[in-house]
Amino acid sequence: MNETSSKTGKRSSVRRSLDKDLDRLNFLERATHHVTRRLAAFGAGLIFMVLAAAYALGFSTDDKDVVFLMAGTALAAYMAMNIGANDVTNNVGAAVGARALSVSGALMMAACFEIAGAMIGGHEVVRKISASVVSPALVGDSEVFAWIMMSALLAAATWINLATLLNAPVSTTHSIVGSVIGAGFAAVGPSAVNWHVISTITLAWVVSPIMGGLIAAGFLFLIYDLIVYRADKIAAARLWLPVLIGVMAGSFSLYLTIKGIGRVFLVGSAPALAMACGVGVAAWLMSRPLIRKQSIGLENRNQSLRDLFRVPLIGAAALLSFAHGANDVSNAIGPLTGIVNALHSYGPMGSGPAADTVIPVWVMTIGAFGISVGLLLFGPRLIRLVGSQITRLNPMRAFCVSMSAAVTVITASALGLPVSSTHIAVGAVFGVGFFREYYNRTSARRQAYLAARAQDLLPGESSNDEALTPRPRKKKANKHEARRRRLVRRSYLMSILLAWAVTLPVSAGLAAIVYRIMFTLFR
Image 1 (tube, rainbow, N blue to C red):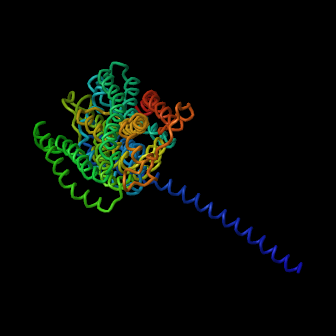
Image 2: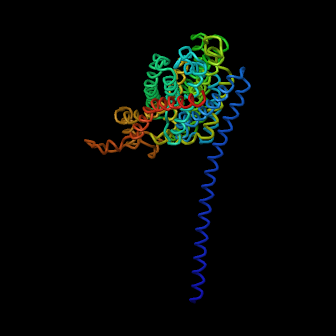
Image 3: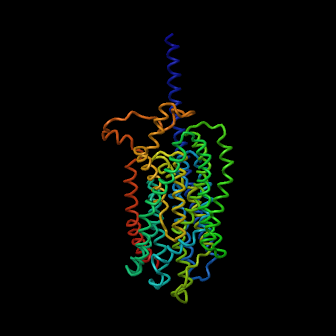
């Protein structure tokens, strides 16, 4: 008996040792797989930079400027990939947070629409970055201007890369504008910086997140008042959801008309507006039977509304990706465009000041595909922060975030203002969260709805619907209760504002240092 027990104990001991060894091997395999994936992504990014530089070689017309052109293109490709990695959350974070899209599906959709937006609508903002922040004419030497732009690209890309590793959604527009200012200041002094343009851009940075938050809150107010807090939610959704889809389609077509068709032949504002209205009405009419068919058999509850809003949310995320490509491609290829125009238009390698900023198609291609490569390789890191950690999103709230960000970015891009899509998207998320807090406290319609629901006057409702279960009111709510009912994490607001505040001065200082080093070593 003792011998049998001894053998059994030995087997158990051997089995435990074997299990521990297998666990160590599994852990080692997982760690190796994780490191290999990161190295593979890094290697793919490096290959893209090399291919971009080789691609630029075919467009060089002078042996003297080939080094500038290839180096500038490689840095622009690096910057574009960092923009894709850091800014992808602005486009699809809300949709992923609302579980309307998987991460892989969101990345593929964003990549396609980023390329389309950059190629069709990115030209106006590129001109602002390439020649308005630091004037080539004031610099006076094409080589010096090229060094300024290359220093700005390297400094901005490095800062954005670091911010992405730290999971901080910083503004890529802040980064590149700050870097151009810092490098220009180090090269020529304050006289080379166009401070009037800087003040205009800075004002747009301040206004854009507020505008994004207000527009998102406005959309959510309409959805709450017209659909969510109605006795028959499904009937209300059949009536009003096609209208929202029509607004989305109309705004998108207006932008395409101005930026796409308008680049082939001149389109007046009145015909463009009429065309957008026509597309919006057509989308409204086409979506009505689709929404009606989709809503057949759905229960009168919020979960049904989430199902109905899923497809429009995907459309809004696609629209936002297009708008982001149109606006933020300038952050990568604006400096490269400045280098190309400077080397071929004036100074020792040219024949006089450039009359206008020309944006070569191959330069736009580098920026468009670079953003997509970056978001596919490194994009998922920040999706979770904006998608779920600031405030809780569902398809309805995420639809408001995406629509607000898209409309604001499209408007700014049409005006040629390099606003920060990060500021707008994050501002829209905070706007939705703060509006929910305000609406839950003050809305008479919501209180009447909850009272009717508590008395079982609303047929077909489930008591599990989020945020609709009436709670007994206290005569005087204490501070702890007020904090418990908060729907926005204030700590993220402060950390994000801090990251935004330091981006411009940090990128400017880094660019000035990089310029001094590069100019000293390679001049």
